[in-house]
Image (cartoon, rainbow, N blue to C red; front, side, top):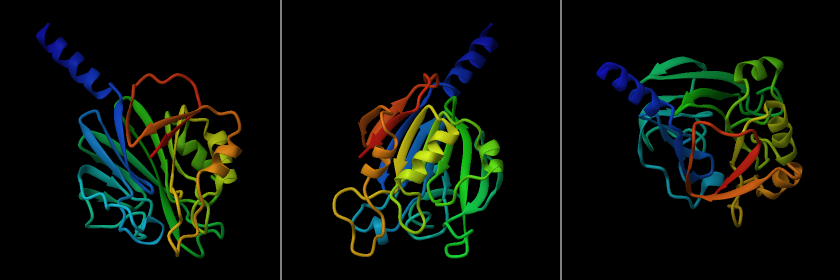
Length: 230
């Protein structure tokens, strides 16, 4: 019937995968299922110095924290979320969980927010701003993501390569997108390093160079595979 056809078309539109664009640092735009989700818009300061700020529009903005390089308000436009909680926006169900932003139980940088949502038929987990090992509860809440976005550059408030690799092992995602590492020379007041320690810690895990934008289908084969964005 015509109604059945419309429903089928609508469902395939929701489950047909996503396109992901990188703006550098830990800022990604994920478009799919009729929605756009922007992660961690930044001011060009600290480790993001010298980058072009992502002045774009999105349905939802998911920030790890309100630090200027991880969740700057007013850079991009869209519904800005940074507090833990359950949200339903534009057909997306988004879950945010608090986790320490440092290795000192949050005593130095407070709490970060870990995000989980489903978009374009794919389950996402966004751990852009965390340096603390995942608790048992975190692992249950995050489940097995199809796509894991994880900071890997080290420093006081981001996983280092070894810690990030351990977290990947625990969550066993199909795809991993490493973020928050230095490409080229580090800005003067930046305590983060490059991608190499993470790749070394991941051993023989396949790595795909995907550039600044790439697409993922809804049905991903088992991984993990590292998608390295520019």
